[in-house]
Length: 126
Image 1: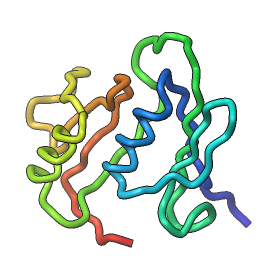
Image 2 (image 1 turned 180 degrees about the vertical axis):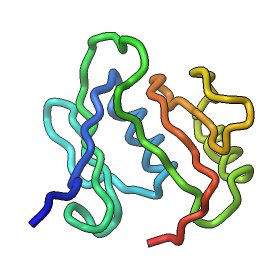
Image 3 (image 1 turned 120 degrees about the horizontal axis):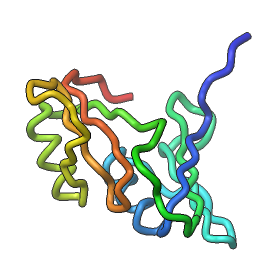
């Protein structure tokens, strides 16, 4: 038997802001909220489905450099250019981390500066 990813944990300064951002990007909903300010977001089916949930934990430590792990997203119902416009309107920012000019992906950052990539290949929605 193998493991699979059930949830991703992201430390952040403002779980509320990032929950709204990532819910917009991924069409997720808020699943749970804990008193300490932690918020779990995920697909409408909840935890345990084909997609992992994201657990946002309040952390006031400064972000140091590039993350060693980042999220890659694929458009599902539009081409990459249209999805890029949607993500920028939702609050993402284009960032340059030294990727080649001819890269087939875009490097972006969420409202707290966490890098993620928008890939070109379209995936079918779940």
